[in-house]
Image (cartoon, rainbow, N blue to C red; front, top):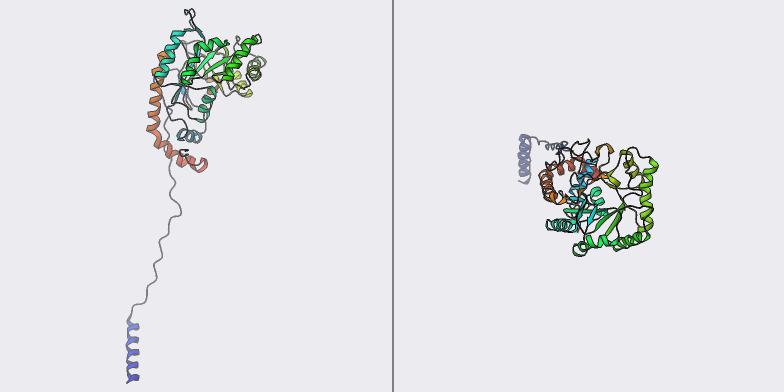
Length: 359
């Protein structure tokens, strides 16, 4: 019986295996793409423009590296887009009656300073401005640089500006004439002001009353530029980083020499508008309606030919500067997504990602 049963089972199993379908092969997986299609960078927006400037004064950029600019612009640790600087030139402040067109009285100075404060401006020094213009370093969103031209005794600064330093922490720039005939008392009093930390002395020439124009010799211009550096080093124990062009005169060659000896900023007497990061209003041609304004375009270095408002006219431009900064901030916000996408595609592989907020 056992033998018969075993034979029957084997016969049945043989029949099943003979009729079963042959096994199929395991399907091969579909190939996985090794890389995605290249991303096309978006077109970048144009430079912010405004009708608040004279039509002959157009904003000029000075950073040629687009990726560097975008990284500095959108770094959240830096100045926010729309941060604006108003540079104001003070030439003559009088305690008495105004007798010259370039004079401002103490009462009018008080009105200007109080209006600046009431509208949210805060004063910065030259080093802060340099770091902002070169690296977009954080400064107050509405900043003002107060620049006093020429040599003055301590009383001048104490009467006109000291209270603003004591009340608000506002510093003032003195564009200092390093003349050979400067009395020792004048050197000593200004050295004291520099040491106190609220008067920031910068270069304004040595001879001073002969501007550095297109007909000036290299020898004369180097005497004005390097001579200012040497004198300020000797008497104030610092190296100036700005040349306030004497008489407002400059040329392509004087700008080149200023770079050569180490200046980082330079100032004209042209009140074309305020400053923003990588945005400086300048002109490439003479204007018959403003014949005293030397066109900056031919000099080819916007950072060494910066504009300044005159103190006698500055109050009338305060709201314009405020609105311009606000409009620039809105324009930047409108284009932020596009600029960040461009940066991510074109810049991040080489420059790294946009930094995050530093604690």
